[in-house]
Amino acid sequence: MFKKILITNRGEIAIRVMRACKELGIQTVAVYSDADKNSQHTQLADEAIHIGAPAAKNSYLNADVVIQAALASQADAIHPGYGFLSENASFALAVASANLTFIGPSADSIRAMGDKAESKIAMKRAGVPTVPGAEGLESESDFKKAAKEIGYPVLVKAAAGGGGKGMRVVNQADELHEAIESARREALNAFGDDRLLVEKYIPNAHHIEFQVFGDQHGHIVHLFERECSTQRRYQKIIEETPSPLLTPELRAKMGEAAVNAARAVNYYNAGTVEFIFDPALSSFFFLEMNTRLQVEHPVTELTTGLDLVQWQIRVAAGERFPYSQEQLTQRGHAIECRVYAEDPANGFLPSTGKLLQYIESRGPGIRVDSGFRADDEVTHFYDPLLAKLIAFGESRETAIQKMQSALRDFVVHGVTTNIDFLQDVLAHPDFSAGEVSTKWVESQPRWSQPNPSFESLIAASLADQAIVNRQSSIENRKSEIVNEPDPYSPWKNPNGFRN
Image 1 (cartoon, rainbow, N blue to C red):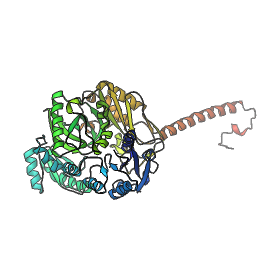
Image 2: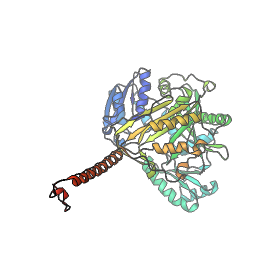
Image 3: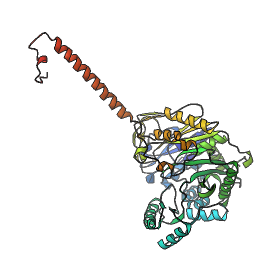
Image 4: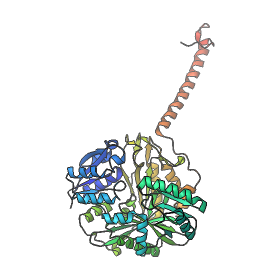
């Protein structure tokens, strides 16, 4: 087993990995930028190493500096968390070249699944259902021909990326030119690669993903699904397991497809195979594979009883994953809400500022994964995720009720948050019925204004008190004037005299 692990990430995921390491008796090394000098993850680690300026490209994305920090601290391994360098095949190779262990899949697996066009071809070979589409297109006439054969609406998307970047929905032929041009620009800027593919767009799709897990001895299983359809701008906001849509037969079929997808690229460690599900046809299609731990992994942990981060570390150290597919079961229902510093009433734009008050929810069946405390600063340099709030219950209804209660108890002042928005979604009949598609959030009327900030509450309170004080002063003055015995008193002069 490893003696020391460097975590090349920040915030809640860095703290999550540290907790797993502590339980395994492993020392931890944190890295931090100038913006994170006083962050919680730097103080919870056994060691903390400064790696650069606030911008991610100058710190958390600087592979050379991260590896130098690991060597300087005499770490045995590097855990990438998620985001930043976690799905970077070149980084995984560089870690191995430095005689360090990369806690994740092989560079070959990362590369195979990182290219959306190539991964789709590999999935077709493995017999995994894929969305009808075309890869390897170059000219605009190629795109027009492919789109006509597939049938509108179609989705133009970046071949080398994900997360909604370089993606455009095209409803008719005359929109195709602009979609290709804008998607190319965005893909080149985000991934340094402007290759695109086109595939059938499924308007009312659900996003269902399967957690897969494998060891380095060829054993691979799935740890059931997560429903991730509540999204804004292709980014997930609420995740739950089990999915309210899947029958046991469909779950088994999708789980088998997920395992086949992972096996096709010789996958080991934690990964997620994502599917688009069409409820009208009860059909599913491979979307992509995330070759890392997912933000929403806690809901899987709560319903399976497995610590995924600990097993990531154990598998990276060469241990066998001891459970067969038949031995793995789920119990109860878990929901995760991502609490963001953002304004749903203003297009979900990020909100920055100092956390004047920050009180996390507590209680039976409630888990909070966070990297923030009161007085911390939310900056524009990183993702505005404040915390992951997770609720577990014996049924979906119980889990929803616990989550609603936990959201009411979660207090954040100083920045605008999406807490009220999350409450609105959970209370909506469509969510209760499990009918929220990936486009549902955008299809709703403008979301309501959030609760006023802490500063505005103080200002309003002071203004209100000032009005009360002034009214009281006026009444007292009137009383004094009426009772003033001196007929020549300046207080009785109405000409505006002031002392």
